[in-house]
Image (tube, rainbow, N blue to C red; front, side):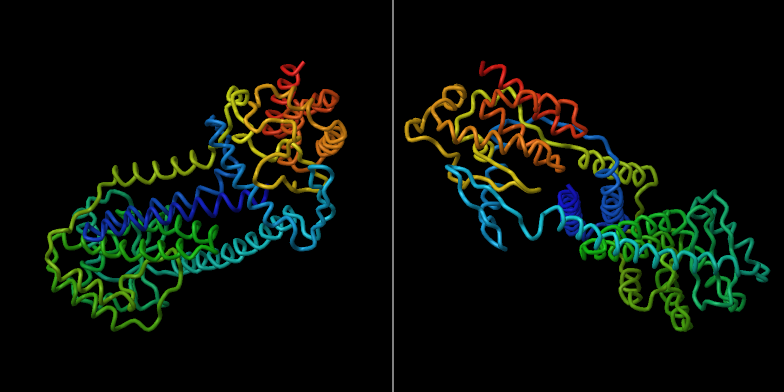
Amino acid sequence: MVNQFLLVMSVSVLAIGLIATLVGALCRAAAPSLRNLVWNAALIACAVLPIALTLGPRLTIEVPTTLMSRVSRATVISTNRLGDVDGLVTPRIGSLRVSESAPYEPEDIGKALLLIWLCGVAFFAIRFSRQLLLARGLVRRGIRPTHDKLDSLVSSTKSALGIQRAVRVLESTEIDIPIVTGVVHPTILLPVCASEWATDELRMVLLHELAHVRRADISARAAAMVACGLHWFNPLVWLISSFATRDAELAADDLVLRAGVRPSSYADTLLNVAERVSRYPTAQLALPLARPTRLADRVHAILLSHGMRRDIGSATRSTVLIGSAAIAMLGACVRLSARSEDSLRMTPQAAAPTHIGEVVTGAAPLMQPSHGPARSPSVPHEKSAGSLSATSASLDSAWISGATDGLIAALDDPSPQVRGEAAHSLGRLGAVRARLSLTRFVNDPDKYVQYEAREALSALDRAR
C-alpha cells in the first residue's frame, strides 16, 4: 500500500505538471498574470494532492469489468516477467506457481522509498523554515522610516492600486534592495538609503512592492514552497515554481505601468536599484524588487509596447486556484471498482487470469502466466465462465484442494491486497469449504477486502 501511495502521487503530480506546462506554452503570448495563474494553480494542486491521498474519503466509481480485467492482465504480465529473478524460487504444483521466501518483499521496498521521501520532506521543511525565520527576523529588526513624505506616498500608491488592507513600511540596515514579505501582515522593507532617493523613484518602488501585495504573491510563494517540499524529487515542480516567480515579477511590473508610470523611467529605476545591491536576501517568503539574474528580461518586457498589460481580477484568480485544489482533491479520492453484475457474463479470456489457480504464501502474490488460467484438457476453450461450478468440477480434484488450502492461508496475510485477491480467487474456484473463512472477512478493516469477501460469498451461493 505504501508503494502504491508513492506511485499514485508521483504519476498524478507528473500529469499535473505536464498539463500546466502545455497550457503555459499555449499562453506564451498572453499576459504574465494569466501565465502566473496557470503556474500557481498547478503548484496548489500539487500541494494538496498528498493530503487528499492520505486523509480524503474514497469515492468509488464502477467501471466495466472488461476494462478492469485488462488492467489486471497488464499487471500479471509485468509480474510474471519478474517472477523468476532475484532469487525467487517458483516451483509448480499442477498448474500453480507457489512463491517461496523472497529476499526483498515489495512492501519492504515501499517502506524504504517512503523513508527516503520523508527524509527529503524533512530536509526542505527545515530549510524553508529557516528562510521563513530569516524573513521574520528582518521585519522584527526593522525600524520606522524617517522619510518625511513616505506616509503620503504610501497612501497615494495604495489608492492607485486599489489596496484597502494595512501595509507596514519599515527600513532595514541589513538589505540594499527593497523587498516585500508577510502573508498575513504584509510588510515592505526599504534600505536605509531609501531616504536619499528621488520622490518619483521611491514612488515606483512602492508601486511595485504594493503590486505584489495586491496580487497575493507572497501567499502563492508559500504554496510553491509546500509543493516543492512535498515533491522535492520532481524537477518539473521546481521548474514550475521558477516560472511562477518570474511571471509574478512581470505581472507586478505591468500593474506599475498601468498606474501611469512611463516604461523608460521605470526601467531606469530598476537598473539604478540593482546597481546598489551587495546584500541579497535569501528568504523564500521575501520578494525583492530586482533579481540580477532576471533583470534583463524584465527590462525588455517593460519597454515593449504590446498592449498586454492587464491583470487577472482577484475574483477570477481565487476561483481558478480554489477550483484547481478541489479538482486535485477529488481526483485523489476517486477509486475504480468493477461492476459485480458483469462477472457472470465474462468469458475466461476476459477475466483476470490470476484469480483462478493463484496460491500466495508471501506478502506479494505470484500469478499465472499471461496467456490465461490453466485448464484441464477436457475444458473447451470457448466455454463461458457463467457455469463456474461446472468448470470447477471438471478440474483435477487435487489441484482444487491445493489451491483452496493455499488461498485460505492467504486470507490471514497482513496485506489487504493479498487478502482481497485470495477472497476473489476462492469465489472463482467455488470453494464451498472456504465459506466460514470468508465470513470472517466481511467486516475486514479494509473496504476492498470486505467487497471481495462479499462477492466471493455471493458466488458460492450461486454455485450451490
